[in-house]
View 1 (tube, helix red, strand yellow):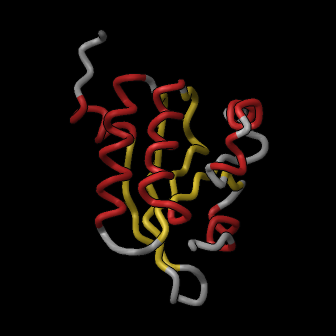
View 2 (cartoon, rainbow, N blue to C red; view 1 turned 135 degrees about the vertical axis):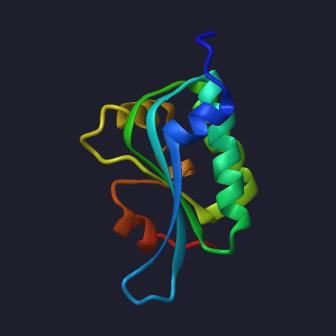
Length: 127
């Protein structure tokens, strides 16, 4: 353990932002994920996604475009949150991001609705 606390990680790794699509009728809660998602950070990720889901009925979009490392504990969080949120959860991993390979080889691209951009996340149905 390197002395990191969940509170420290919440400030360094995650940020929640509310946005609307171009028409203004569709709301999403973006969870920005920075750095590494390991066993310790996965707890914070779960908390942030849960908090975002409680803000309203819009999409919850996890942005992994600035994430450098994502282990199985992070995958477990996304799978659990997908079961909780259903199609409201979208995960953005650009095609050129090395993490995309993790989702490709595990077969989770379709199961978790992994998309390449926020615009694509808005195009996906939530029901």
